[in-house]
Image 1 (cartoon, rainbow, N blue to C red):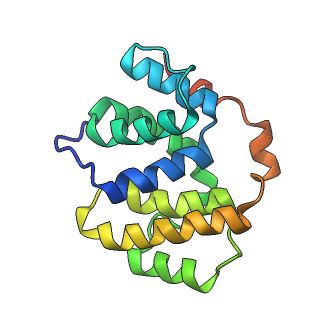
Image 2: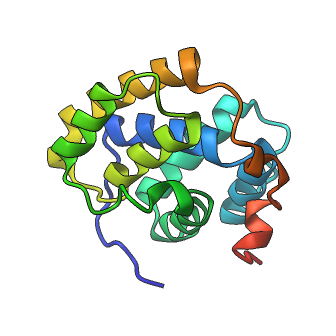
Length: 161
């Protein structure tokens, strides 16, 4: 496991990661991951608390980052195929020029390609893109793709013990 030595918890990263997790990982899987990371029961918490806490924990804990990133990479692998190597400005231009054409998972993958870089110099761009993605998901995102409805629980797919 590669460990990140510095904590990167800017509000822009936490906000973007909360949206990514909410779109990409089921409430049950998020609770299970949170419980495994802390040893405390998370199933009784509000969903917003679980996703916010998980986002913050991923950005402030090497173990949290490792397991959360692994889950997101697995879940969003298909959507990220053509996004992961693009520079930030090209991602922003693509989002702007194709408004309404993205589904919720593609928007989450778009944000994830920026968040996984953990670059504080991208905070302003990430803040703007997170706001736009949130609106797009609420207005145009609709239900997840059909293939997503039949996925096994993500924690089983990445074999978290």
